[in-house]
Image (cartoon, rainbow, N blue to C red; front, side, top):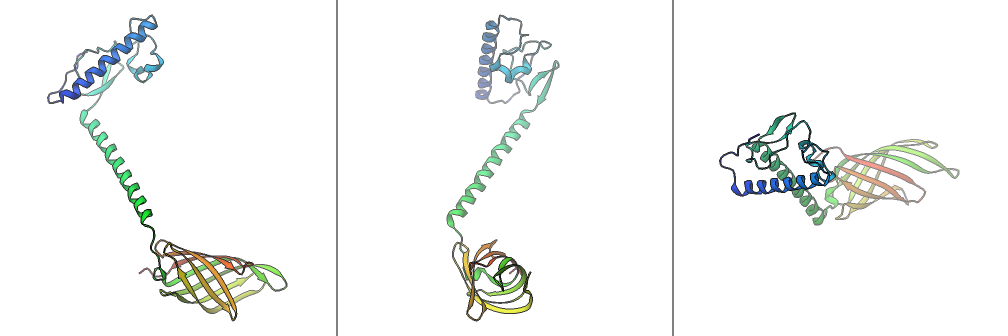
Length: 238
């Protein structure tokens, strides 16, 4: 089998391939001698398993002194299955480019994390639809389940008004109840909401702002017996 080296190949690269070919030949020869086999038809040693497809009884032993081929390939069934140098180069370039993009994306992500978030009361502004659910105390020392929907308007300066429709499993429904309160937002996009539920009754919620203010998650902290969570969705995007 005679394979011809193409014109214009990098001499340094070709020499490296020749050197690798000679090392591989020496390794084959040494292992064959250890096994007492000289015709190249033995089962390949464990350390040469990656080249097992070249070590087949039905295929002549590869000539390691041959010229570097125009097309890369492996011997299979007595024929050369070829892959062009151009395809190999293209795949290599794609892998390198993909790796660079991953590194770049990770670097950008880490950079964004390092810069931190910058939320304020202005991040939460406009109308939000809210769904709440949980449990709360009921008359007679009982605990009831509660669900509800709320339309709340944040003014972007620390105040809000709302209209709620809430239903308790024991106390029933309170329709279109109006209320108001205040809120504070930290730079890390967490915050506190103080809702005036009734004269002298204040409910404290803790919040976290998601997706640049498009969504808010809340949980009641005070009173301790009230276990209600809420999900806010901005109704109109700015």
